[in-house]
Image (cartoon, rainbow, N blue to C red; front, side, top):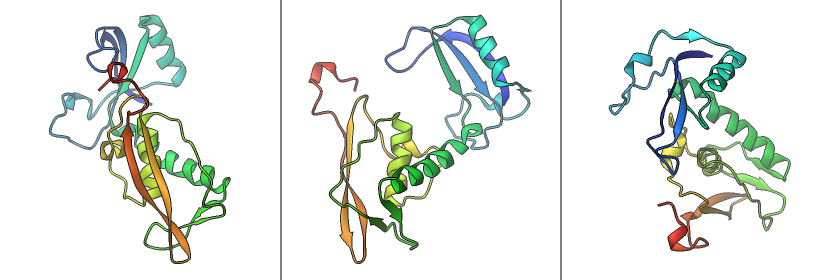
Length: 180
């Protein structure tokens, strides 16, 4: 993996704000977002093995690690889409070859629970809803910590499509315990 820098800092976001954090900044993002604060990482960097990266992270010793740098992780969405197809196929759900997101579902009443990081959940939802990928698919759906989203299979012609019926519901969490 091509790495621009690995350094220790103070986490500035999330519930971990204020804690020491090791940042591992990858090299090569090609998005050029208007809000980017690390254009210096577009080029250059050093090729490092996973063993080298983890050794440096261990040497720095912070309790948190943040991998940042954007699009070098682009294949994340491709891996989630492929994994989603395999996961669903093992449960009797297969995408029908059609321009619209139609599915063959062996047991339409079956419920499937996916517990994952918000980014993984967002990519998975895009997969089911047939949405085209964006560079960071989870920007489409904003999730609160421990939130619940729900998709429902609806019959359409000879198959099914999915409808988003709840997005990032926090009703199961006491208001004082919510993070947003």
